[in-house]
Image (cartoon, rainbow, N blue to C red):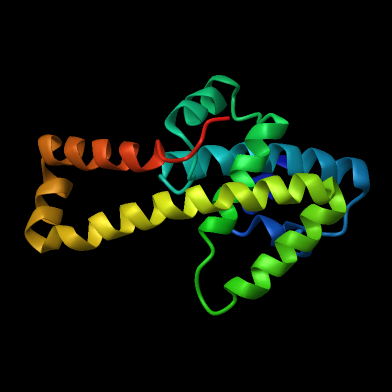
Length: 166
């Protein structure tokens, strides 16, 4: 089994909570290697695509740490995952994530994640509201000019700064 290949497959999935279901039957030590590698790849992908809802300084720290998250950063990341849940199955996914986090980390850890998700959700909503209010002409300018892309990026940064960094 190629650890790198399986890790890349897992990292391509947005739903972290379903990794266990999608990972082939492998031994615990090999699975731990796959998960560790996949976590790094997943974090980098989410950051590069702008889907990770954390304070910009936390994003810089993660990159400087080669995407190896500390305990506090993992709480922020899980809050981002929860805040990003959308669709018909979002309530079910929320329950699955809650159950897995409670089992793995305990009640205090889960409650900290749950508290943090509110600011991540608020930042996401602010970014969505701004995107919707732009209109087609402005969106085209953002996509095709450095000036307007920079302005949009600055606004996204202001939204992400709403998320606590501690």
